[in-house]
Image 1: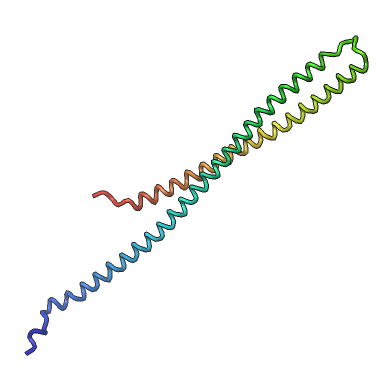
Image 2: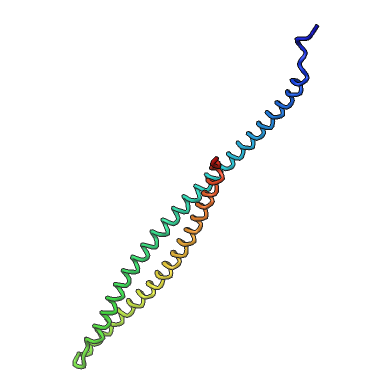
Length: 162
């Protein structure tokens, strides 16, 4: 008699279901682990991009500050050169000897040349400042986009409240 070895019919039917359920659970765990690995890599990439954007924005901002400081210095040089041109233009009267008049004309020409060079440089700096402002704005937009992507990932990873 082998009655101890025989299993009830219900127990035999349950065994394949348990294995099937375990297999489903293992597959679900594998998918979850693969997803977590992919999401982790994506988060690292986005964080690196955010950091690069922050560095780029900081560098562009430093350059913009330096350009604006140089514009201020050039404005002072332009004001000084303009003042000198006016001063020398008004200085020679009709009773000034020709040698001194020639010296005044040389000084006026020198300050006019300086003034023109300063105004040209100022315009270059104003253009550079405008370009830097555009670049900063564009980079801030990219920075915001990367942060939004991180926020979206965070929302997908946050378990729903029950």
